[in-house]
Length: 170
Image (cartoon, rainbow, N blue to C red):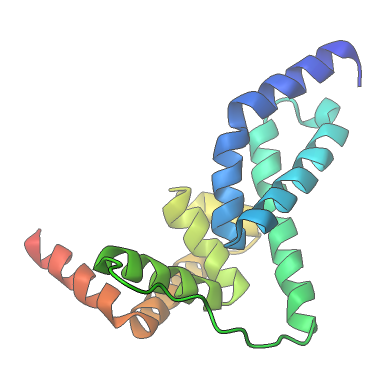
């Protein structure tokens, strides 16, 4: 990488790493895993910098989705030991408990459904773009999002009640 490309890449990292880190955290659900994910994707991005200068963030985001899906697949083949999640004690607010329940429910979703929700609602991408990123049809994106939201409502009934209250107020 020449000096100009190195400077351009450094500028990209400085400007976009915060946003990419948030995405990595949402995908992985763990700060350390998110840092590892971002670091590996930035290394791949740097290696391909000459070829992706037109849309480096798009490349990095897609690489992050694909890398995280691969990590889920590898983990699915490993034997997992159930670990009791840390639970808050004392005066935790309902808001925090709901958020933790939602986080656990998201982590329990199959990888494909979780990625669809992240792309569609966290990244706020249109269905067509999500379909393009994942290499599937728009109908598949709609179906996966619908099923994932229905599953979240089953796993976190408090969320379903809150959504009904918000939707009823409209």
